[in-house]
Image (cartoon, rainbow, N blue to C red; front, side, top):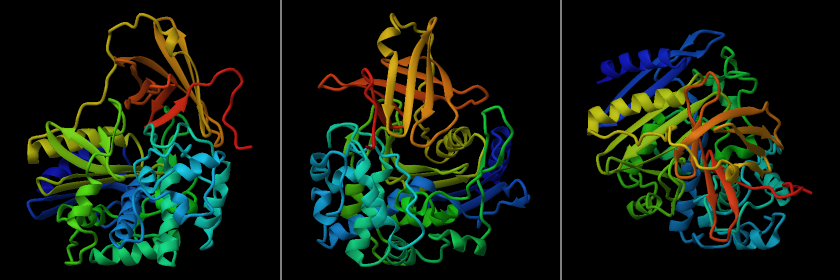
Length: 455
């Protein structure tokens, strides 16, 4: 099995300019692994199946599992207010802070403006300091009303784990999950990466530029529970996936969580608009319907590194892909389409694509949509929309997308030089609020001089 997928990984990585990638497949009780390219374009060190990459937000599944262990032990309940276990937690709206529950953090429905990557240092108090810094954050919608992808929520959960376990999140992860999976190379501290063949991310300053090494090897450690730091090999992710496929029983025979808990985590808790990150979310898990078959998993992205994990619970199959630059989304869609078609006769749901169907009026879509970290200005240009994304709290060069209709109130477009489409979904809540969702995040329409603030 490895030989077939080695050839396809080699070819597709070249086609989509991915410097290095590692692939692991678990199917019918057998493991196949392969790797291609280099872990670092500057050193030309080859990628191997043992190489470790950053897994990004796949880490959220690990944090969620730590939380669910506490639920099983009776230390937490999903509908407990966060402040019951994290009394120092506050937001700009104290009412919202009191209302948010643990379940809402796990399902990205808290309403917290969630892309907050405050660096609170390297000490063991970094998560405590991060929680204190959250008091400046606004909310995008009332708790429980909508889905909006929220990194903040998982850092808060990480701090709850620390308080309940009486140790750091990193230590809790090592003891309660990684240490139960068998021999693995999950790395929780950046200073441990020199022990391994470690990938570095590669980025483009502009979409048309050549790839170069990412300026930062890793992001702030204070966002580790959300996915800023953890490294692993593709085989390591398969160990975790096998544990889930086997009802929480690890390959070493240890019960990490119960079968009932696994099923609860994989049950839809919130549905997403068409063309978003997934069809639905469970407790941290992305949930998909591929040709009528339930598929679950998560994606991860850090600076120049992207990771993908998909499991098919009813078939005992799991696939993990780790990459370090280029156009990884194109590699993922092409390769996973072939793998799952060959092994199970299913394919990922096609992404929304621009259609030629004209829109009667573009004016209702125009305006400024803004959250704390990002501002999107949408304007009409003849028969198309132009959407310009700019960084607020974290400055970044403006990126302008030329959008075409891709469905009811859905538009899609790619940056110049990139084949990967980005989906923009215009929403109106039952209360009449107008929002723009892209990347799974909602951006409220700005009216007048109103601006998100941390003051």
